[in-house]
Image 1: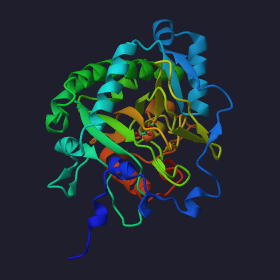
Image 2: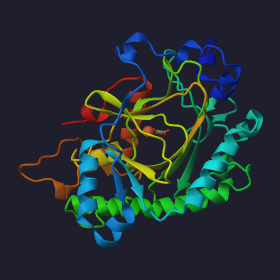
Image 3: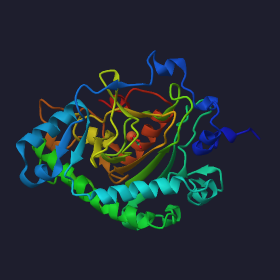
Image 4: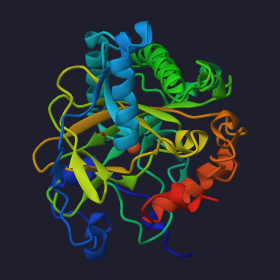
Length: 357
Ligand SMILES: O=C(O)CCC(=O)C(=O)O
Ligand SMILES: [Fe+2]
């Protein structure tokens, strides 16, 4: 039988513990560096920060204008005054760190490999390796379905640290409210009914939590923590490491560094699903994560998608004779397959452009 061991990536944490040259599957090739380096540029302005409390309570025109401008230029922004206690954010970070610091055998109890070899979306491990020449990410992750609540598969939910499950449950409740506040604010600036975007999410709409762990990497000049991608779901709520930066967004051909989030803000970006629903008025930004030679980094992303059986297409109220539909309609689950094939193959730059009519 053919040797298929390349399909089963190593734990990056274990590779990092050896601190040797990363295996060749992790090293970017000359053409992938595109003549540039991974250092990234400083953003020409501070990360746009929206006071979500003010925006939601009073529809403050200044905050609404900031949101519109952030979505049109960057596709991401930070939110302050979002109603989530700083202590809760710290607890989620601490529980994540404690989980990733457990012995490998303990984490493997939540493995994303069935019988040690068949990949499944949920659980602890690495992204699926689809081809032998795929560049691998210098990160381990834990991926969990959080909503609908009835769809949780607790077999993948860590029991250590003890606080993990309760923390995630509480955190998800708060994030859900934040997500709805943002969707309402976005609907208003698009001059849609206030609940038009919220209503795109029915009771089967999935929310996934993705805990990312980026161990120190001996070759930050040649290895990425997460390769360039745009998020698939409609909206991402990201809790970032307070001390270590690493996230970069692409704008007009330049990769910009997002500073570490030291002030209990949350970072929001929109994804492909939202880009299509808004007919491209807002675009899901390409981003990637670089590695750090000395320090580990942790991030926790909450991904808000629509029902896989739902057809995604531009919202009818945004279309007119002058504004025709720019994207083909497709079921969310079919689009997801295309999305994974596209980014795993390292193809770029944006799958959204390939979906244009
Ligand atoms: O670690 C980060 O800051 C971003 C993670 C990310 O892009 C993702 O999980 O899709
Ligand atoms: Fe992402």
